[in-house]
Image (cartoon, rainbow, N blue to C red):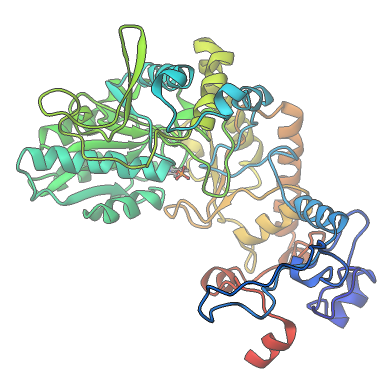
Amino acid sequence: MSAINQSGWRPEMTPERRSNEATFTGNRALMLEEALIFEIGSLDTTGVDFAEAPKAASRLGGLERHKDIGLPGLSEPEAVRHYTRLSRQNYAIDLGLFPLGSCTMKHNPRLNERMARLPGFADVHPLQPVDTVQGAFEVIHQLAHWLVTLTGMHSVAMSPKAGAHGELCGVLAIRAALDAKGQQSRKVLLVPESAHGTNPATAAFAGFSVEDIPATEAGRVDLEALKARLGPDVAGVMITNPNTCGLFEPDMKAISDAVHAAGGYVYCDGANFNAIVGRVRPGDLGIDAMHINLHKTFSTPHGGGGPGSGPVVLSAALAPYAPLPFVEEQDGKFILIEEETAGEHHADSFGRMVSFHGQMGMFTRALTYILSHGADGLRQVAEDSVLNANYVLRSLEDVLDAPFANSGPCMHEAIFSDKGLPEGFSTLDIAKGLIDEGFHPMTVYFPLVVHGAMLVEPTETESKAALDQFIGACRSVAERAKAGDAALKSAPHFAPRRRLDETQAARKPVLVWKEPAQAEAAE
Ligand SMILES: *Cc1c(COP(=O)(O)O)cnc(C)c1O
């Protein structure tokens, strides 16, 4: 075990830090320092007594382990405190406003959780006989019905596990449709400059080559440039609408018409569906495939890249290529179609994306959310989210540059740039200053089309009082930057850690704990 004592004093607390800003323990009032789990506790004081095992001949052929396996040795209260302390260093939607643009960090209603935990949903197994899980299939079927109705599309593939996975599903359906027409030579997917990074990544992963579509001054897709690029090598486009600048693409129908006329397909990134749910049906805009992030629009929890769900709605043209499985209703019973049958069921399906039927817990939560709002409530979700974003936009445009403020109202998110910040101050300083104010920063430096972008998505779940407090914090930090307050350059001052070397952390993450002696020897 390491030399760290029970108080959780951390080795990286340098003497200067201690004298300037730290306490003996490293704790600050109720904000408690916490060492790694391997650095606390001791195997000498914890464990379980087993009777001596009877001697038996080993059948491991000399492969028995003789060394400790290196598990941390914590008593129950130590373990409970460790994880509770760590949990207090998290920022969460249940703690405060989470303004991350593009992520739709809305409240996760407790009713959803309640429903998802009902034993009839939580305890079913995907390999159970079909007639014992009729209720679960009905949930999938009803949710599918809502998604198809809300989007005005032909059908939906429920199984993809995230937005990005849904993109892959849609793009593979496009590939399958083109291949079925003998158009293997269509290999280019056009993607706007402002696209989420997952769009070009998905296209490349599926074997397409990616080409940029430029944006206009007003932050929209340049329709003329797009039309000029269409041709026999183009498989289609991937367009986010509303886009990542928080703007609706008013030319969407014209874009779809042009792409279809040139023999391509239209993928819409539906991550921002929250802004238009109940107001606009993507099917009416000529879209062929669109993923829906249930953890964005339909309030299911976001969680470290999962457990996610990204159903993909499809046009009649792409539906035949959708992945299996499907739940279908036949004579008042729900059945699961797991295999393609020639000339009958989904004969042209491009295959399967997941081992079972999709993320049941998320389906149950999303359907609960939909049913508890109803069609009129969902429409109000969209309207209120747009209203809240415009309130933020108009309340901050005098202290932060708002590049598209003259292009009319924004949709669900407001975008600002670093223009007008004094020499030496950057978007990063604004973001770090917000941490001291007790807010998770907004999305920064994305989308790339806006210099030093700050993308704020308040969602409809925030009250005016909460928005006013956030706006006040943003104004204060922006004004400090404008006044040249040097302390902002080293913010956050009140967080458990100061500025981290984020590039180093991303490029060379230290993922394995080593005993301090070993770590020193390695250096
Ligand atoms: C969130 C998001 C995605 C990716 O969705 P995941 O569910 O995180 O995989 C794709 N595009 C946009 C615009 C997004 O906001």
